[in-house]
Structure formats: C-alpha cells, structure tokens
Image (tube, rainbow, N blue to C red):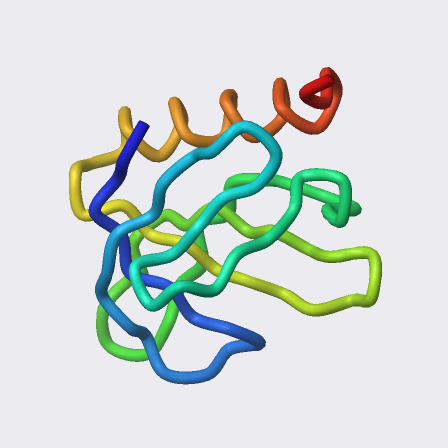
Length: 95
C-alpha cells in the first residue's frame, strides 16, 4: 500500500512524500525505511499548535526513542487505515 504523507522527524521540518508499506518495513520516497520490529509505539495524535490546529498525525516511536510524525494528505480515514496496518505488522511480523 502507498500513502501520500507529510513526515516530520523529531519535530523537525515537515517533508511531503510517499510512504509505502512493505513486508517488513515502511519505506519513504527518499529511500529511508523503518523496520516494524524497531517500533516501540504507534499512536494517533491531534495537537493544537499556534494560530491554527495541526492536522492529526500518526506518531511512530522507535526503540531508540526517535519520533516520526506522519500526516496523511489523503485524509483522516487513510491515517487510521495506516495506523491499523502498522499495528498489525508489528504484532504479526513477516516470516
């Protein structure tokens, strides 16, 4: 599955791109990837920010404590679908 997203690493700048769910990892359009086995936590967050509310985000926290914030450009339904896919992939790793 492929999703149009905006990604922020450790609250850095937001970068638009594509996220693909692969068998054992999620891969970003720039070539970087995150293995499902390396994820400590996955949750959906809605944060208020500044003059306008931030869009809902999927937050991934690695076992090392790195934080990725992913917002869907396809809407809230796609974000929840992505969250469900990631939780499932973490709980049932590919053989």
